[in-house]
Length: 187
Image (cartoon, rainbow, N blue to C red; front, side):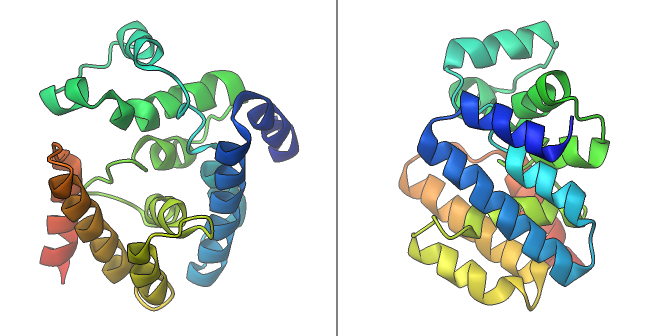
């Protein structure tokens, strides 16, 4: 399946605002890939499909997890929306015929990050965070860094996410903390 076919199928399965966000994320991912010398086609597909599972309800998310033997930790059980990345990677493979593990991992970890993120993982995570439809002030902080130092931009995004989750009295996924700490230790 080529990206035009993926786009048409995705458009049919998402609400209009989610589809616009997905296209915006794809465009931002392409720009970041160009800037950092990464594969634009891989970034485009990962950016386009990153939220392909976002509109599933909790029952559907749980079914995918059970059917694919994905063990949920206590944080994931209490915040099933976090699993739309993991389930999105499954849907990208099954419904959109994506076999490229780089793309599938970028989709898988775009919600939490993880300690061993490659450049495409970082690009998709940040493209999702800064695409033009994101109007929160913290997105501007990340936008000001993203073309200078992608790791600093990522630390800023993680800091903002962690602060937001704390303000909501939510549970912070350990992958996000590990990813942030790994980047800080890398210096």
